Length: 250
Length: 250
Image (cartoon, rainbow over all chains, first blue to last red; front, side):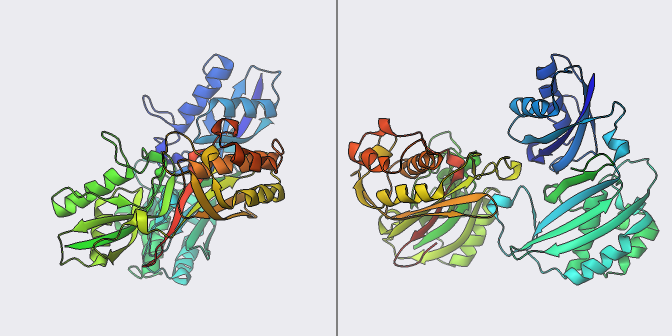
């Protein structure tokens, strides 16, 4: 028996999120279908993180056991791509220790959020950006982001049921404006609560418009109350970009 | 009565081509649906060029008459965008003479074809590029392209039924390699036969791989026989990029 970790990119638009759900087209379910065609039996997989409907993956990791001991990681990668639809692509496959867990072994997770800050929408990027045509004060957004970095109780920044410890550490938030009207918000941390990155982006954008003062963000955190917060940023701008393990990074 | 010309971009992936067809989701039909919601009656439109299923528009032009004389071009543009789905966007609207025909008044049409020439596909660009992972000799492609510019009988470069005069003039073909692994093939001419640009690109790529010698292209032209030619490039890499009129350009 071998254990593999696949580095997987996907266009989340036409998936009902990452995680297996009966009767729904999910990334995990589609990946397990491809594994089943290769192995002729069903294999349970584990991902490094869940992504919601419409959210994309670039460096997602899916780990699984295989009884096809004669297959190298490279051949497994090719076999998966031959059996996956056009909106999932395995960038590479690593052979890992038999107890490797992408969920628990992840030392860092990096998310990218893309905002298209232009007067006109871009038909060809609409599935991958949040089109936001109003002026954004990037400096104010950076100051607000600084208040979110470090260890905090992020209860106010989660949506829906998530019973895990709400204390999380964000190691950095970088905001970069590109000449192509794209704004990238790059968020790094060990792990995140449900919809936490999109709630952070939604709040930073409100600060950017001036509708919320930048020092208000600390109050939101302390309130631990989601109902105070601006709405989430839409899913299509978000990419699960990278995971860093001791063994490799994506 | 006013006559308007709308500059329209669209993602061709989910349309059954530009031209009206019963029971099919076409760009023209969808545009006429939006006009009908605004005017409360059906309006016949005229486009500057037909595009096939999967081919995109950036500077397509759609002209139509309107009895809403009180509406400015700007307001008409906003009204259309409010009534169009996410994969069509009207970039602007011009008021034009009552006899303006985008089909016959076009002085030049420019098509862009995008090839992603990288080892790995790009999930996020798969709808808008032809992924071609093999080495391409751009210099050889340019020499082959030079044999196609000018006035020729392009019978060998059309697909399907097209009874128009096969003599066409290509004013230029430029091939540009970008650092991002993209190759752009930009083709300019007054008008084109059915699938002519994709047949040109398919042939140039075969020259780029070395499978066809660059001086073979003149033989194809002279043969006037489609059956000699390599297959068409796939539709998703093609964009109807720009139309130039005396009155304006897109």
